[in-house]
Image (cartoon, rainbow, N blue to C red; front, side, top):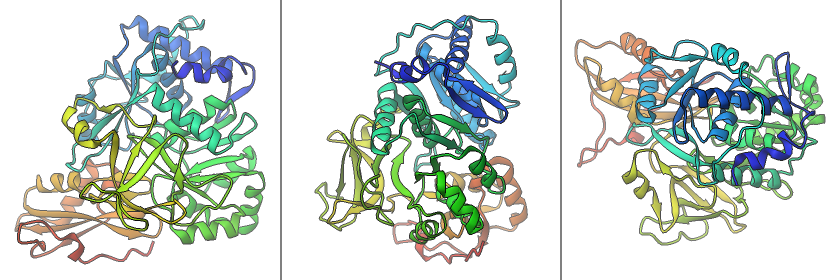
Length: 484
């Protein structure tokens, strides 16, 4: 069984129902299926075979979904690339994944040859829309999604058809999602939050989805009030922005909604409380990651504890372990380990990193947390110094290495500092020699790093505090206070 079998009740069982809205366009499930068939035949005609990679560098659009479905049908491995990435970051992914083609809306930083999505649509229209016979299995790799590593080198997590299916079926059951739902999706499709959760629950249940190009908080009220969704997924930054709405508008939005879900970064407890007061809904917070999709969730029915990510989802084993390999006591902080059908097949081209990531069949998440007396999990940050800003993961080592490449930078340390909107933002601490200046460094960062990775402040110091063994003591660095 592969993903197409899981999607059949929607694509084949509800063919004439409206499935997808995007701007002025509306696609029935039949049309979605046919468009993806045409693209699958086109890819086949261009020599794509099972296991080949197809990279996609696109903003949210229907074609992104059609391409994902076409790749799944043909057995081609889908490689979504973050559109905020610059040449340095994109080049690494494309060199590592070695895709047979890159589909984009325009130029791709650092990559000369692309297949324009407009040309693809025109070419695909000449191919048959009849059903495409897929030979993929549940163990076939459906996608490689890149997630930064603590060394700064981005690693590709291989996600199988079974991974996606297990995750989607779990969420539809746990969150009571049905074909009667109306789903508003504003998250970027290149991220597993939207692709692995949003697209899966939509195509498995056959509900109606309105896809937005991006979340724009000024336009959000109109989208909510015109579509009247019952279901919405967001990250903490989005929910903080939604608190800016007038109370009357918020209550009006809340009338049709039955479930707001939050993930990708910790949700501050005061935001959950303020949102409940304004919208009349308690946000459901959950926990997942690129390598595992969803692991743990607060219950749909039952207590949603502020500050916790809830209980393990059905079929998923989760535990907290001490450094010595023994289980942590209730309330004691340790590393969260996960095992289940949602866990990825390993890192692309990185056998040693894959071996190091597992112990006794469990994936070592690198996240610190504890379990309370009721079995609820609470996360306490990373074993590494991961920064999560607006739902995007930032690994300081990558920024530090880039800064150290610049003339005049002798030492660099990047840390996450609390921010009222984005949760955290990166701040760079630098030891400079005479020929370096902060203005030029900031310009270099903006030109070569994704916008969310650019440090919000550059602080010069005489020296970095270090231990006797030379490890930088980042907790001793002075933290700027961001007011907004």
